Image 1 (cartoon, rainbow, N blue to C red):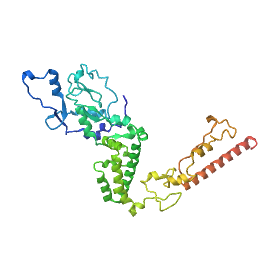
Image 2 (tube, rainbow, N blue to C red):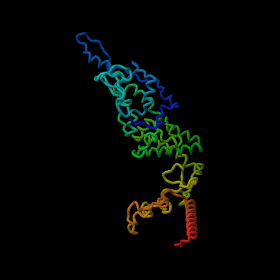
Image 3 (cartoon, rainbow, N blue to C red):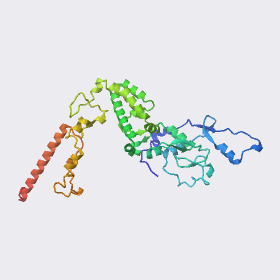
Image 4 (cartoon, rainbow, N blue to C red):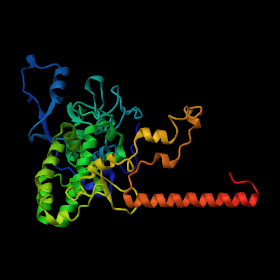
Length: 386
């Protein structure tokens, strides 16, 4: 069975235990109310059993209460098991017992819950269907699968809570699903704009929060942009969440930021083009790069970096700098093992003009000290200096 990393199941955290207190249980009643017939027209035993357990979700006529112990168990295995629970001897259709009511099971009165991998009788499992969270996280599969009444109640109760930390559970999905990668960029932009609005105008910030409805947790800081609810992931797959966030950003956040003189003071100027008509906004992080020197706050437009050969070396130049293509032409063997890769030849991180000059001075000083050290060593040893 696949185990998710420690801390990825927020349902088991003490601070979120209140999420498991579900009081508004769904109600069920038979599809067809039983009716009395004359003895001569009475149903067979098999037909009677079928009519008694054929349930569906409706009204207030009959309730199946789910115990706190069972809800706690369902929370402990969130987002669901990955395989059938074969280790439990009672989890079998041949003489086993229902996982909810402990009724003895038979092959014609057994149904599998795709969330917890256990078997239920037809009274506790009415072939209701739900999206299984694990199938989303493992293979981005949103197809609905049969679940028991208790599991359906449980999943419906947590569907809107941001309890899935996608970066800790399965970060590979960001690379495999373009919608998720785009959503992460949108949420980062939203979080940066929210921080800017709260510093500038509380009324504009409140308007932005109101536009998101019940999803105000999307306005958390950058450390929480990987938290999703089940309904969020469904909305990402359909495109509804991205459309909602873009509308909130364009109509309520950017409408204030782009017209506010106080917000304009938080921008910076590109270190390469130095064009004041193209200010660099903190929320437009895809359009610029920060200087790679720790502590340096200078920024550069991404297109300016591409045009500047000093700031961004092409892949071909990188290979040439480490003698990959020219090793044969210079008399080398051309083998990968004969190629010496130096850190200077693979420098891809952008540096501002001041930091680049400082680095050059430091390298020249370092090379000068190395030459001086070599000269001193040769003089002491009596070897001729080449």
